[in-house]
Image 1 (cartoon, rainbow over the protein chains, first blue to last red):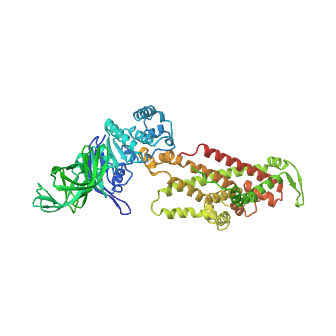
Image 2 (spheres, rainbow over the protein chains, first blue to last red):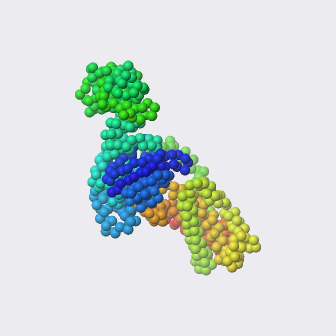
Length: 347
Length: 293
């Protein structure tokens, strides 16, 4: 177990491309941190820098108060699970799992014991003498996990480990990985582009965009108090509704409608509200012109326009709905306000 | 998967005819001819021949010179195969790591591939020229008078050297593409699992190159046995004398210089059987073990 400190970590490729702007954060002992963002946002680069697979251009990377910028990947006491599993195709499952231990001069019987223990934990017992090519995707993923946990590393690194699995298996492995991490208590950094994975697995989420950290926070914070319009639209499915409005006379004006109780300076503003924070309300000040009803069983999504802007609203299955105009109101405390130029959260 | 078929059976046969004709004219017919003449003894002036059964073969088995040449061929093949594979692998591993100017390095190493064997042999002649060859002078610096075409060992050395030089680029291309087809993440996983670079090479990279390596082993053995003819012929300037030669060159010398068509045919039949055995071995191995996916 270990703490990880990133101090202005910076990555510029030799061709001049800045993959990661100087970024700092701190991961606590035993914490499960998820790096999430669209492809090309620098999250994998950041993980690979922690692993030692990418050189660090500037800044300091500390694992347990030891600067490891120039330490070999094999000496960082980390274990990594790769997106395509990266198993050694010519070795049996047993050898795949044991390889890292053999090179660390662990005694033979100790290796055998640990491999059996890991195989037991991951239900791999009967596959130990097979080659990776004889395993299914989920089993290969488990072998990759086994290879990581058998080493007892102080830090787990996951690089989109579930993206090659089908939806059902992904759901199951998500829970397994999380449970395993809880049980072992090993500090973990997990990279994904899937915001559902991030929300469900993380102790803390780090949202990244264009080589920059947009927000660091618990899943609740990131979801309910997004730090920018990017986070608001990236996290959550469907995303937060972002609507251009205006503040005048300390009231939020939007498309001819008014929301009281905003003690802010006058001027243009972007106001954001989650689909589930818009409620049907006969006396509501806002009018949603419902165009499509999306039936999802447990709930419904209403897609329509409000003052010319596309808006999505979430209603429970017991609410009767139809297309056409619908009076709604917004939960005032659930509204997020953003600066229209910088996209940053206000207040 | 649905298989495409032909409406009539004549069209596929018609399409196969050109290929089958080429194989028949350039392989089956001469091969059959060789088998046939290996049982005959030609008169020295080429006017007639008489059936001698297996005499040509049994003569070969008793012939000390033939055994000596066979033994040289074995050593020559082992040396050429080993060094061309080893040097090519070393170059490929190094070239694989080069990032800047990678293309230029690779092109420089590969261009030798385009050199025809007799030209390679001729370059060898220049390098080892008795009076001004740079390699002759270099070796002279170490106190050895290098005499190509006169000293048996010197000539053998030159043959091996030129043959290896000629074959390295082919192996290099295959090894390099083999290396580049190893998934990057597998190498990275090894980077985390093993701190020793040589350990990673022998545990992970080398076994994953084994299919390429095995294929090249067969190709190189065949090359050393048969395709070095041009190099040898140029290096000994067509005057074998007391110089080393391989079995293939001996076929040529006995048949065309010595006019012993029967004995020469018997030798080529033996070589044919050798190639056949090699091919069977290759297919067996390929089927059985050396692939992972």
